[in-house]
Image (cartoon, rainbow, N blue to C red; front, side, top):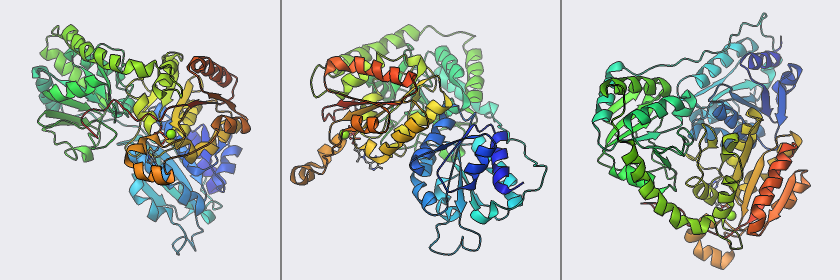
Length: 547
Ligand SMILES: Cc1ncc(C[n+]2csc(CCOP(=O)(O)OP(=O)(O)O)c2C)c(N)n1
Ligand SMILES: [Mg+2]
């Protein structure tokens, strides 16, 4: 068996149902021969974003795989891998390499050398017979420990080499580890004794599928819960103990409860310092539960830590807390829920004029509000893009079902949302998959709307066209005034139609809901829809304590 065919067979054994890629790479042809659906994008970055979403929305039960050619393909793919690394998404990347006689000769781009710092595992295969073991190492890495990309570069002349038969490959195992019971007892004691504990859940809860265990612990402790942007939807945001999610913009209860907490329990989170997450207040007692010891004391010094899988950690903590409480909660819940409401209601009231605005150009908040009240949230996966859409969507979008929101932003590449929605739809064909983006974001990856049409990936794309990089207006005033530096233009509904998709430009408030319904109908008929809302240059966000 040739090496390319061996790769395809291994992908099959690993449960890979579609190979996303861009030519030239012999794995594409071999995958098709092995009946793995191949999906060809318009540029590498979007394909990687799609693979990334496949891993995210399946809690890495299915691993997204992307392949591309040596040289330009690998050079152009860098952003997609870097984004997956920044946001900790486990994907397998399979670039071809230059033939072995040239691979280490400048100026040929060498993936092994250049991707070192955006992968958790990287290698260059030097002979066909080594391909199966190299892939076993890569899949073992993405299925275990902190989720991040693994890359195996296969030189073009290796693809034609023979791999000994029968192919000896069993899928990589997925193993979990639990924290030290002494640490669990310690943390349980602290949590039970805390007067104002807050639980902060990150995306580790999604990968561990620890949603139920998180809810049980929160209800037992009667502690309010917030999430990072990446962890959003790990806890139902319509639950009386939910504060809403963190991000650059947050609901006010998130800010107030974190500020007033005595103990903050971070579960499945990195506590990384970022402009796109809440800043942890000083002077609190932190309990940091994470899979990755590299995160400990990195940004937030934590006196107490637990290392292990988020679900196993939450279950162990739940049992220890239960024992300390004599099996049941102490009756604090109503008071905590009432306090949350007391902060939430005036906060929401303050934003309602924007959320229900009748103005034209449209308020982006009104578009989001109407979208939220038109779709079936339990059957929807939504993601934002960088820019105002993120900060306008995340505080007001209530996620009630695990993995119904793909939050991101440890690095914030404009244009990421489209590929995420497409990958989500591929992995969950029964869901309505939505990306909300701005007119600068579409400039990066908009051509791949054609991929959605051609590959029959019917997503709903909500575009806020304000003919501007509105979020940059406050810091680019002179450049805007003198040279129009933040101005952009385009008719994106027409672009969608030109690609064979459903496109509609919406300019009046009464047309928002009917247009959304028509867009959803188009997706039901297998056609991706792009709804272009002409919006205000609004750069007011629900931010607290940051510039
Ligand atoms: C690849 C990349 N380059 C630059 C940025 C910085 N950036 C963040 S948002 C933004 C402008 C966003 O404009 P738009 O998408 O139109 O959203 P708006 O704020 O106008 O609603 C820029 C330049 C980025 N996030 N990603
Ligand atoms: Mg804009």
